[in-house]
Length: 262
Image (cartoon, rainbow, N blue to C red):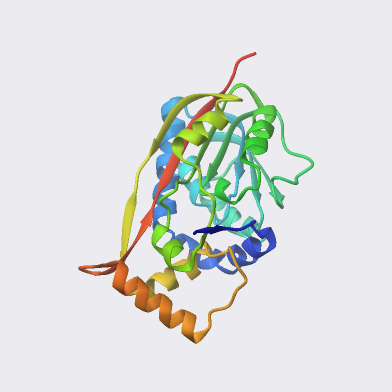
């Protein structure tokens, strides 16, 4: 039975802070998700001009770079749990400047002051870490202007299922249908899709290195004992081998929403 545990936001912050420098080079799926999300936004708003944009979970700047390559933005507000990500975003802005930039550090679920009258809210591979998705969507709706866009990507129920099957612990993921039901309370759904991507690694050790370098292991403080480590390597090789080594499943979900007109 998979154990779904309460997210420790401080542990998540620590793990992602530690991997800021290595994230962009290792998060190949999340980069593809950022590209697809930016394309979805441009399909919804072909002029690609936005006055006020909020990004939730801006991290190392993958989505910011994709958006600013495609869109003209006057005021860009970026939020992240990891305050140190501010410097990563400034590096992006050196190449792709905006008229105004504001960084909001901290847990978006606890932020007392968020910008209002937004044209666009975006979030890439982040909302699976939230405690209350319904409340987050309600809050984003309140801060968007009527007709404003919320576009986000997250992960579905097959995500990293191989690791979860051995470790018996994982995030509580929603199906695409469940996301549509929750989002439909506050938004019109203009586009949604999902896919599965199998990433291959030369060995279980290489897979664990990938996980550490992307910070997505922020679920438990439990340390690896020698016996637990050997068991994981052995079971992963036995159950999930492929021609090139071993594989891991990612299950991206995408939603593009429009705030209901009053």
